[in-house]
Length: 285
Image (cartoon, rainbow, N blue to C red; front, side, top):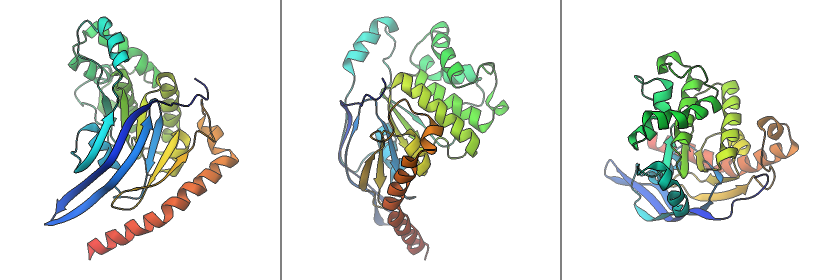
């Protein structure tokens, strides 16, 4: 698809708010989030700790309820209709899949069955689901580990399993919450490159939460910068206008434009990080 930019809107957030009751008082986590994410866009969200990044993702995943506002996710009806005859009546593709920072694979299942879990739940036969998942296992570099159990895998390999499972399940939207945060730098760079390559082939709509400015620049079409709590949108930065597609991690990081973008994002974040720190210190007293 080269440098084509996604145009159709996939997700609309209309005044989304979230607040919690903590020890008898109201704590606002998100304040009136207004945003549109395009179909096929890799959309990264950065912000200080406690700004509501993960809360927003969990709301989109249906794991949290919003306190106010509206969320519209445009279902791809044509895609569902096209796929239905081939699925033989099994459940349609899920609207979203979520990948967490911590690995969430089943310790008693081997790699192949972990990757195929969602397909099994949707009614695919063993032959069908293995036929679907085997190419994804190869694509994340786990050939030869099909029968390995999670305790035999490194942390990076476990996250490869999570990524393969999410793509194999063929969701319309992928929600990723700091999936590489716990990994060493070398493994992180390798997995970023693999994620970009797999995403280039599928062009799923991805919402990706990260604390890393570096990671956001490498991966994103656009970066949404959030304020300290309650989380609001401070800026949306167009990375794809600077770095087109396809994109290589090493090319991005070695460019002059990378440093300029890093400075711009950090310039937006610096005051918010300091404000979040002041909030945390005040709550600790």
